[in-house]
Length: 162
Image (cartoon, rainbow, N blue to C red):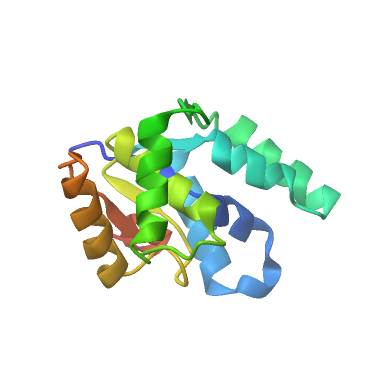
């Protein structure tokens, strides 16, 4: 079986601690137990995720999310906030209206995943990331910028229950 390279945005970790999320919380737990823990695929995060976690207002939830990153030893993809290529790519997603201008971190998630040639970006963010139309528009922007490896924008459901 081919090991996929999967980038997690913050929503996947956050959903582990949102009891009101119901089935999505259960799927996130299954994803960590059945995919991340046994290292079925290579799963990564970036400093963007850590920065978003650090902004979590609920201190207990923030600590729990940090503990997940540590417990599962989620490797960090290199992220240089001054990297012109990364910043131009994230800005392009916003300029093209693919990602709203007030969701710059979402654009950074996609840019990091693209530059590091991830197979997938796993997210629960339907509003600004997950979706076939958005995936196609990001693919066009990526190809026009010289990044030809396809990046799937998926939910953990699509990985946890293949």
